[in-house]
Length: 313
Length: 287
Image 1 (spheres, each protein chain N blue to C red):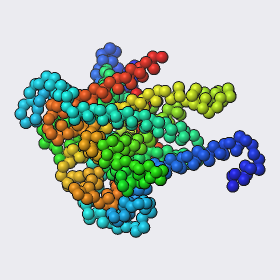
Image 2 (spheres, one colour; image 1 turned 180 degrees about the vertical axis):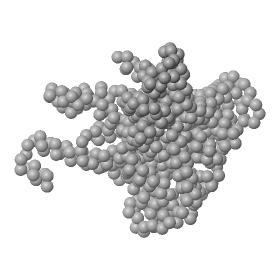
Image 3 (cartoon, rainbow over the protein chains, first blue to last red; image 1 turned 60 degrees about the vertical axis):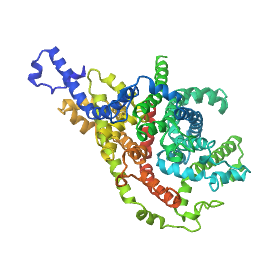
Image 4 (cartoon, chains in turn purple, blue; image 1 turned 45 degrees about the horizontal axis):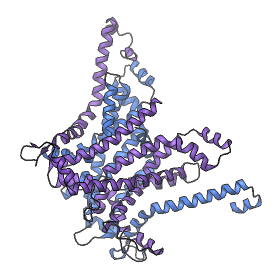
């Protein structure tokens, strides 16, 4: 309706036109203007993101080395995927990483948010400290933690030594490389999710806490009765984001361990990189990509479904 | 001081509160120290001779401070080139992302036309697409276009995200439509409204988007690793790795370089902290 006053008032040529035609021409005009705003970003986006995504699906059914024309091979790449030891190891490792990373990051982030969700001196400083690792350059993070985890001289094992624990070889050990990588990831990402939890905590109405206090509840009871239900939407969002993040994990592990030792920390994304960009097996790499894509898509759909259900309530 | 003052009038509630506060601070300081420990190691090792980096026990304060590491690094690796490349890429990508993102966001937030909201939902859904899943076809595309090894490939890949559109649109929705209506009555075109009314009003959101994009590009590793094969094109992130040789590694210099790569981010963060936090809090609400 507001479109009707787009033209300058009193301009006779516009006023002289019959009403319906004017509205239609405004619809067209608006569509044109709207699209002209969106197109610069949209064109880049379609060419750089959407086309490759569609190509990924098509290529996953082909065998292609990049030079000769691609040949259709049906589901062969997918059959190979489930028989290929390296790819299955990568899938298992990715799940292992997720099982460690998701709950630990969630607990750390929630703990920090609960501690820092109050008005007190220095709270901004502590929040900044918790968040800073997230924006520190990844290569620096990976190199530093590799040194901290040094089996002989690293501070981590020296610290464990104080308690009489003989620390493991961390990134040089096939058993302990994954835990080392998980610890580093949790340290790096917890501040980001802390901010999401803080936003969630601040959205809980203060009156609920006051009412609970009047009822004579203690802090733990208030946490159970007010904070936990109030945070449920945030918790669910963080859970999904973290799981997606875990399935996509690549650069930190790649810089820290290159997937090693052996294949101990090889994850799906690195397997895609290895088969696709290094080995040039574009068809097979696309099939692994489709697997990763589907895992992430399912999680995202669960989130949409959940949000939709919440809004209907 | 405060404890003696409290001992004189020991209201249990007050005492409990002070003890609680003190415990909280102790806990927070311990947590902060643990979180900052890797940074302490970085700075300390960056100021040591390579032989002093790994010692038992750890020298947290170097016995023999090597300030000259911070001078030598510039001649040991082409740090100036790396820095210039990183600044160039981050600036160009951030500008393009902010420009096209805020422009498109205006179309989604303030211009009404058929199919707008459907298009927006499709747009947003793609934020969830994992780059790792389509990096191979994207790479093939760049190879076919002859763009691998150039800055242009990285700029194209990173400048047109849907995230910027989303972030800016959320902010534009909080700007009352009446402002645009008034400007239309005054005869301003839609482009004029965007440039003269909406942009100046959305500085906080622009700052959030610009800072998040800049830092992301600055820290990006995989993009440059895949596309920038030539040493002259390397960014700081790639350059840092060049200290890891085949048989030996110069750990002290690696840490010196790490400190140098983190300092710009620290400065940006100290000045723009609230914009980061606001940007992330908004992106968390996208679900």
